[in-house]
Image (cartoon, rainbow, N blue to C red):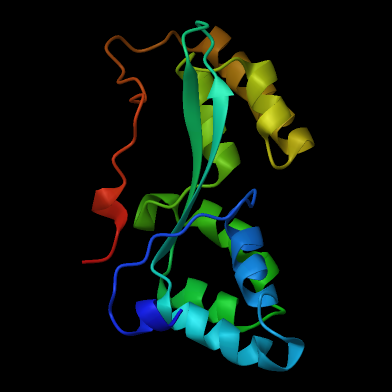
Length: 168
């Protein structure tokens, strides 16, 4: 954390399933009496959390990355600082997709299913909220039967370039 606070680029990996768990894991590395200040320091030093799950591709050729992306906006920083508000992060990430380029795993999984990159069954097994995800897949299937697919719709690239989402 000291390196990040002094302006060094720090890239780290943790074996956590999503952004909220990543924040909680980093904070839990500190003794209980230091966790409040650790939340403050983390909220100030953190710029983004990118979580990934590698899933088998629908065509059987390799794997596709399903990504959750949290950009540390002022609101996200406030949620990280306040232990009682950290649980609000998933909804905030989902609601901030258009404005800030964030996305939840389930949002990206829906994109991957819609573009036939992963199967609905694979995506469902990897989803964060399986009942809600299943409802969305059913809704998507009903819409695709009613509305013909648009010609030339762009496919989700096999690798995502996330550099445009990071703060300058």
